[in-house]
Length: 194
Image (tube, rainbow, N blue to C red; front, top):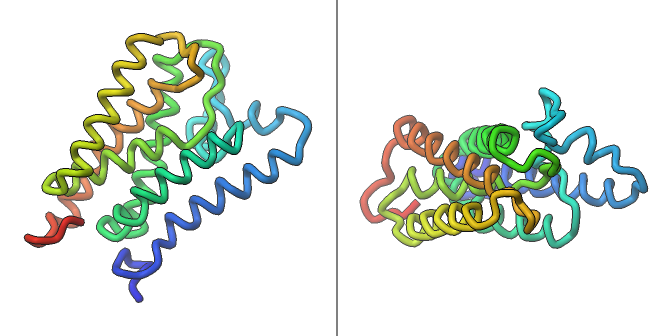
């Protein structure tokens, strides 16, 4: 088994990220105060230096968490197999931070950002850029980015409670990191999708 090196084994980094998000959510549901949101969430008007890195592990509802876990489960293992554990961790963290800063710069001023959507958007983009011959993921990534851009254009103040700036910021960082990973790891062998 080569899971730790990103081979055909168990996707350890994907599992660690999922367990971390699930654990934080279970713990936060046992609290009656909003301390976790205040300390980890990104509020554009009054953010702290660590928050663009911590908001991605905090979710407000089970539905919010489950959607992000499902997307991580869909795109994380394949990305980890190709980019190795360190590559997936880099894409997740880099996309989360980029998504957090995009929310600070372009998001609604009073909405607190939490959730892994920016990081997961980055994983989707990285996979599409690292292996553009995988047309299903490339088309899915382009549709995701286009849908988020269109939705943001029709809801710039975030009335639907979706962080479009974070999604697109994470996506852009993931695309950039996917290109770096493609250069570092090389293109897949012909006939291999990922």
